[in-house]
Length: 288
Image (cartoon, rainbow, N blue to C red):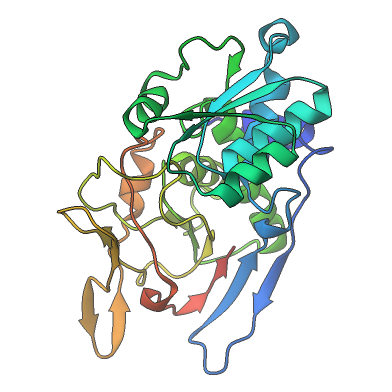
């Protein structure tokens, strides 16, 4: 878990770079819950990743980042690092898999980032080792850097300021950095308030999962008694989402708050794909 003081310090540190996004009510006819969305798509790079990237880079000693910034990402973290690098007048080198979409590469280059294409296996090794061979500079790990996770946790502070008593907070799970950050903030601010931060338990590990997971989407809140279930097919292939259990026409949740309390950044190789169609909620909810 990330200490609350570090998350609060991150909020102050990134205030001029990442925006405080709104939490808005989602109005659905016959919805079984009050659902609120945290609109991280309004960030300058259209992703929450700018929070963690900005915090990690600004927290680092200027001497560490003087040679430039480096990360390994197929998209959103790459843009976050490139955005902050441009703001600070630093070069940024982004290691990407050679299969990365051209639209993502173009976005990185528009921000001034240097794209370094690697064979997929070599690129994945940079995620594991936190190092790009032959490139000097500060490596910003996309999911396992505590400073990145603290930046992600600022979302949790904002959710609780705008919706003080949600029944639960629902967070997408890719590499584990977003989940750990928000869960740390929620647990610290509401230790006994009945607010559970959780995510769908990941399915079997895939050796071909993209950085950041398949679901780069929402965080929010709903009642403990309901969640969604999603997993990647054991044999590889495309992601699979389905309800874990059905009873009386509604989906029961497979999320366990205890899984989150065990805490710690998750391995970048554990992924799942949540799908909105398998979410069923009762009670007050916020999802962003």
